[in-house]
Length: 271
Image 1 (cartoon, rainbow, N blue to C red):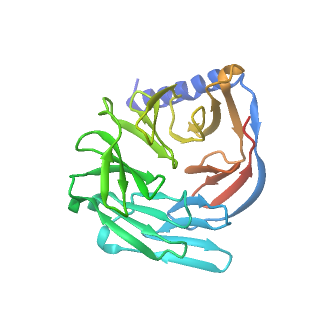
Image 2: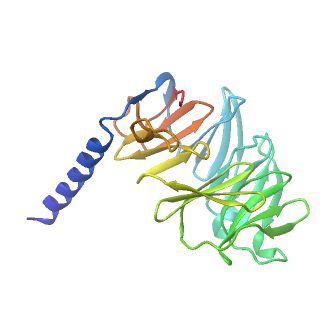
Image 3: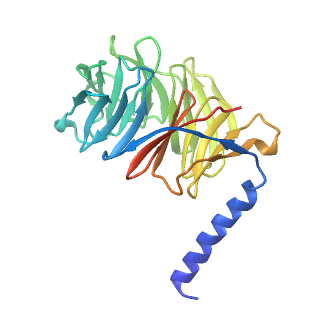
C-alpha cells in the first residue's frame, strides 16, 4: 500500500470513529442570527457592548459600525494572546518579549509590563486577567501558577509545580483552567486550590464554558459536552451550516464561527 493511500485510510478511520461515537447523541440546534464577510487574520470575538475585536497584520482593533480603534506595537513583535474579559482593561501578551500591555476601552495604553525586569524572575507562557488588579501567570521557570499585582508590581505563586505540559489554558477572573497533554482537565482558584475536573474528549480546538461544560471541535464537527450529564454521555453535536471552519468563539450564548471568508454568529442555549 502506498503512503498516500495509508494516510487516506487513517483519516477515513478517524472520521468514521467519530461518526460512530457521536451519531447517537442528541443534536444541539444553533439559530443563525448574523453573518458578515471577513478579511482579518484572527477574529477574537465580541464584548457585551457590541464591539468586535480582531488582529490584522499584527494590529489589534476594536470595531462597531463606523467606530474603529486600533493599537499596534511593532517593537514587541507578534501578539500571542488577547484577554477580553474586561473591555475596560484589555490584556495583550507578547510572549517573545515576555511582556504584557494593558489597554483601556479606546485602546490607549494603560501600562506595559516587562516581566524580565521584575524583582522575582518570571518567564510567562500563559496569562489572563484576574481579580483585584491581578493577572494570572504561568511561570515556566518553576512550572507554577501565580498572581501578579500590576499596580504594586508584586508576584506570588499560588499552585504546586505542574507534572505535565499544558496543552490548552483558559482563565476567568477567579479561575485558571488548563488541559494537559494527556487531556486531563484541571482548575486553580485564586487561593491556590487545584481541582481535577476529569478528562476531556480528544479535540482539535476547545473552549471552556465553566467547570463542567465545554465546546470542542474535531474533524470539522462541533460538540457541546457536559461532564455532569448522564444523558448520552453528555455529548451533543451542534448543527451549523459550515462544512469546515478555522475557529470558533462562544460568549453569552452567542457562537461565532470564523472562516477565511466570513464570520457567522449563532444563538445557542446550552442545557
